[in-house]
Image (tube, rainbow, N blue to C red):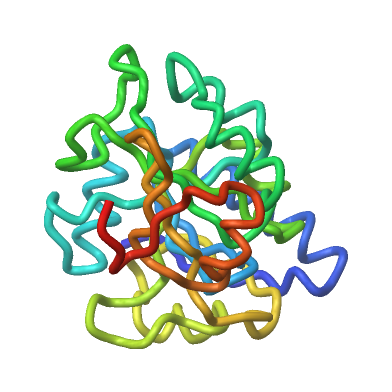
Length: 220
């Protein structure tokens, strides 16, 4: 059983120490909890299949519920696909970093196993300085909400620790989530963007960027 460490990233000294510990944990294949601009996330190295498997097991999920991937920069998106569609470029230019998750085809050359994805990946760049700093050190991370399936998403790292306990080696605390609304998920694998889940970003705001965007209940 690994030691569990919770770092208060609101304190400068603990933030630096906590981020270093989290980077080491991710590189070692352990799970970490990190703050985002929506809810706290349970994260693992996206390219370590056993870490992603541990993430799914910790959440009591199967391979049919593959986790999204968080990135720390727009440039990281280029490394996940053969080419970034124009609609994705427009959407991320408008809403990244922020509560927008785009679903796109990933490059078949990537050496990862996120679960049963049918060759697609859901990607987001969160608007949170701690998350961005961590992701820029670790590279893309598989991240899902930091809670057991069926329980409310954690609003603090302490909440996540109460649910996840020793399954996670490092918890990064940054206070209550500023917004508990989930990200809006947009499928960009077809000819027009299709909203799969309307969250913090409304369909109206998406249509300001791409008027052809289809709502979750609209006919394509």
